[in-house]
Amino acid sequence: MIEILFFFFAALAIGAAINVLVQKHVLYGALSLILMLTAVSALFILLRADFLAVIQVIVYAGAIMVLFVFVIMLLNLPVDEDGPDRLRWLKFLGIPLGLFFLFLVVATLSNVEGGAAAQARITGDAEAIGRSLFTDYLLPFEITSLLILIALMGAVVFAKKDL
Amino acid sequence: MIPLNWYLILGAVLFLIGVLGFFLKRNIIALLLFVEIMLNAVNLTFVAFSSRHGEISGQVFVFFVLVVAAAEAAVGLALVIAMFRNRESLNVDRSNLLRW
Image (cartoon, rainbow over all chains, first blue to last red; front, side, top):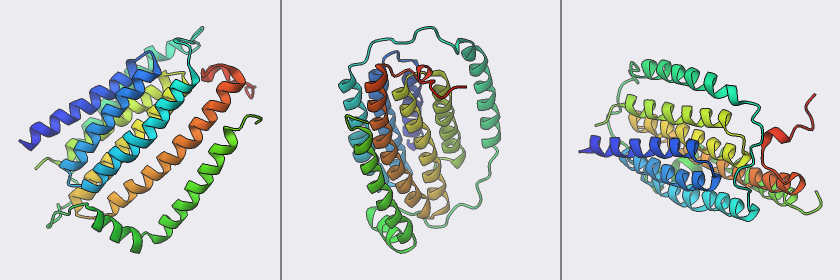
């Protein structure tokens, strides 16, 4: 049963990611990416990382992708603004090389042992993550707040009228 | 119980789609979208290992990756707005002022 769920959401994630690749207009790509993020969040639930699944939907699909869609609609993009594509030959070289790389990676990863499985399965709820975050990872957590502050100021400065 | 390899392969495939799109697309917003795909593939791998080894640290790392992704999206989109205001185009090939 759980394998069926895994294959369903894995196929959904890969299909949505490929759809981002083939869409002409970037807005449809962004909407398809929201689908992929939701599928990955379902996979997090299968891995018993409940808190991250919720955060994935709230922060990624809720906040970051809304920001993307907002900017795309704000800019009022021309439908296709390609012009002469300097890199057209890249597709004929890049896609076979990418598939070859994919073959190498899959062939390697299917033989991974992954070490001994844990005895007790953990549940990544808010309590466990918060406990680890505020004891072992307290300093990175505080530095993260500094990063957010810098990003906030940077975004305001870059978006100013007279740059 | 799903083997660890399946999650690793799924993460690799998603990461590969992200890399492929990053090199094939010319629209800078699309490039940012593919960066998000790559970050998600890495997050999936982190959570898979965390679940396998019974170690919560992997999930804490995903938390940090999420924060970096949010900061990157905010600054990146501000840059996109500034670029569009100055050049009326989002094609990265046209931003070649520093090309030799």
